[in-house]
Image (tube, rainbow, N blue to C red):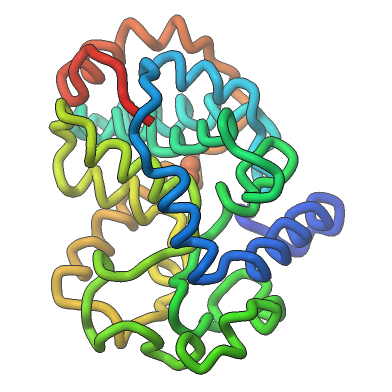
Length: 269
Ligand SMILES: [Fe+2]
Ligand SMILES: [Fe+2]
């Protein structure tokens, strides 16, 4: 039988995944996201890329119904699939690092949802905060639990945003995508092309890239973003398998690519 991905109806996997999304929908408010930006976007903790990769050996993403392996395995699987399709070296690197923002669990907390035990501020499909939640969110029945949905500033179609202001002007639920994007944007040696940075920043934004929501907020440029994301997403999603790689073995191949696009010094988290 062909494997079905992102099946949220499997009872076993699902109690935990569903509970994760209930907390995420309930607690990721506009105010919470502002607070997380102030708290986590400090860029004052130096750590080598490979050390960060190593730390993801200790983390299993609770929001992912398809994978129960340490997150670093998913990163290597994505990168290897991109490599075997002979895609550009920078895209292979993006596959390898796209979930690295999850290292925030090292300095995260249960109350922020950024820990091993509480991951609702770190992983899972994200949505826009500051405007109405769309029905395309996974478990849309949880939308009404979000306090912003009974706040007239935030619960209309446009909310706090201007019509067609574009993706880059929206604030998304706090998580690993935005964290890594901001860390790399502030990294002085970053040469990852724009398409790669977009893949990093928006890969968890399913209600937009797969659900087709938020059309009144998008601008012309976002059509290009959508092509990039859809191209990347097949490697993020369909490469999940149980093959185990050794980080040290694949490092020989990826190290020169990482050095080319990110330099050789530490990254400031
Ligand atoms: Fe991710
Ligand atoms: Fe991923």
